[in-house]
Length: 228
Image (cartoon, rainbow, N blue to C red; front, side):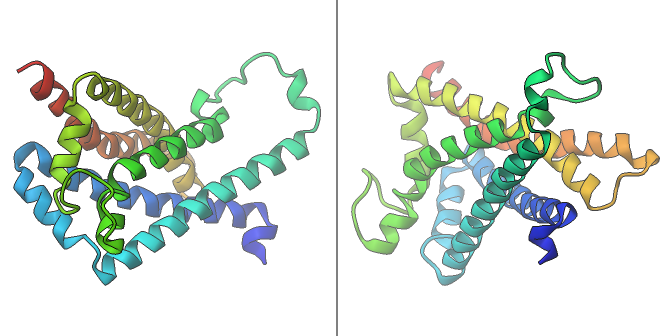
């Protein structure tokens, strides 16, 4: 099948799955931003997106996209290293015009996935999983997402540590998205002379729009929890 056997097909899968994940992150970020204005509004969203059938389908679809995207990224990296052979050990200087993110996309992706596992434990496991199974996995009601977020970022000692960890995670995510969105649009055909620089700007804007709501929530609780 050309989606697996050809370079263009593999990059196409990476692009489509990556852009789909970006759309989810945009939605999730806007949802989280409600915390800054109203915890009740956020909990209302959590109740709507709880253990309903459509939420379950969305969760399974999201898990599939993440697995597909990461698997293809790993597969492409292995193929690229095999193709380069020992040449990669002979390169000592940074290639001109090649950005740091481009050369370290897999590393950034591993960091993002690593923190994603921690994020799933802190919230999904204690909320949707608990609601689905009836198993008590946290200290609060599974639909009281605001309580979980507030406790994570404002608890003495561990709160500031989590704030810093999440901000580091978001920096890695921004770098990953900054190049990833540009690369996806480039693969899908926006690669002529006129659009080349424009899609780089689009990549930076999209990465910022995704990361900013998440960072705003972390910083909000950092300020209100420890400075007020």
